[in-house]
Image (cartoon, rainbow, N blue to C red):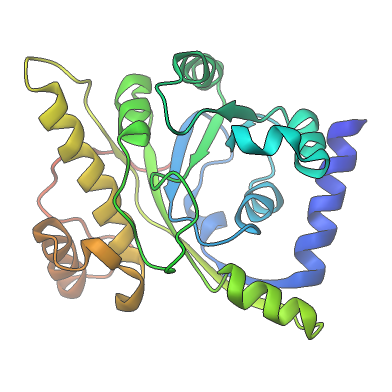
Length: 242
């Protein structure tokens, strides 16, 4: 009962406050395990996830600081989200995520670890890359624009709906971490995820990855063929949606 009520309230909030254009229906599978890694611009992002991915096995992290907020704590309980310590290695949270993915769940994660105050991409943390390589499931890059808190709350005050655009890219699979250079490989995987996200974003949103060599490869490839079918020389194995 609590889960259905929470989803209903989320649907209501999203419908009343946003107008969204997205290709998610054409890209994301309706069944099976996968991970979506996306940029994080505003507080409405989590609601958009639950509104548009209509599955009851969604997995998201919630920062520990929200435990003491009655509003967020209630939603966290009803939606079975996972609290995580963002500043220390939270092995219990990681184990729980991997358990749920193995059971068929879908993880949505922001590799930056928190909302971007500038609205542009910040350095990615290794958590998303570690989970994806450990789980061995397809990872879909996602990019959202228009949902910055400054825009969303300004429109809310004026009783205007906010125009949000969400783009989901083609999936890839990160191989397991092996050998003595695990840290270097993990950083390479993290850069790959972030550059895949950056390639889906308008230039002004690309932040610290704007001049990354891997992003330039991806953009060059996308310019030569249709963006829905393009991939640069792959660092990782690609895997089409089912």
